[in-house]
Image 1 (spheres, rainbow, N blue to C red):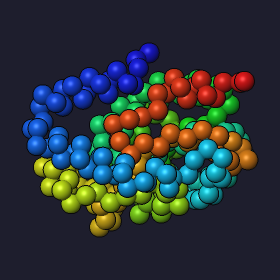
Image 2: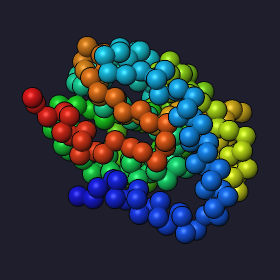
Image 3: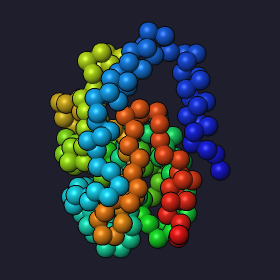
Length: 215
């Protein structure tokens, strides 16, 4: 089984070779400014209660979070979108450990601000058979303290890369969630959190499996 961190490191090394240094510097500066904004401190953390909510999955079917919890613990993976290479690497890595997550008595659920059809594309691309919830307008992510607005300096860079955030999200905004992974107990209380304003940092799937193991 591949290690997500190794894949991300390899991608970052290739990016250093291909992407102009001034663009890399702008990306790094914006990431540091987001970290300095204190958004990580405002986000939901272990010990907090996950708010209940209802969102459509990639098939357009309404799903209530409380219904998942009636059946099992939930691993909720909040990601920016299928346009993000780091999110794609993460989703593929999560697919690889999905049997272990389910064997441990938990359910993996994704959440993204993308429209259901875009979320469907991500699910199909990685052949991952889970619900991916479409959080239009980042309304739920806002309750979780994860939402920020893409800086003006990054918007033309994303546009040149063919990334149209409003088109992916089906609205006129440039709001995104900080990527986050939460393990939520059946009582609705978060038992483990991973929130990092640096979108290149993700929770290793093998660690999720280890955290779900009986103690």
